[in-house]
Image 1 (cartoon, helix red, strand yellow):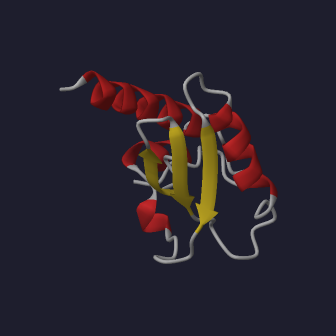
Image 2 (image 1 turned 60 degrees about the horizontal axis):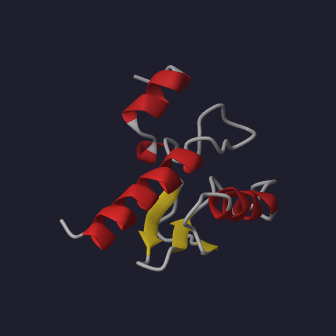
Image 3 (image 1 turned 135 degrees about the vertical axis):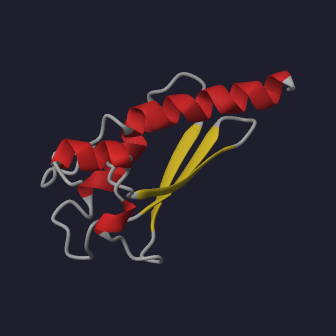
Length: 108
């Protein structure tokens, strides 16, 4: 693996770790395990682009959550910019919650 590809993978892992520290205030599971994060792209120059959704269009944190995600990702050394796009397709459903998230919620 080339050193730039390894650097991108390392940075992507760091971004994923940060996303696992961001919680939906209504559900005690992080946004990554909830399945709200659809994609994380990192360019060789350290620009991060995240596509995510919310549990519903009327989510009370529809404005603040994407801003929080961007701010936290920008704090990662090596990240030159961060952009979060909220998408509604595919719509989020509880089926998107990871196994770890289901365990946290007591859903089996």
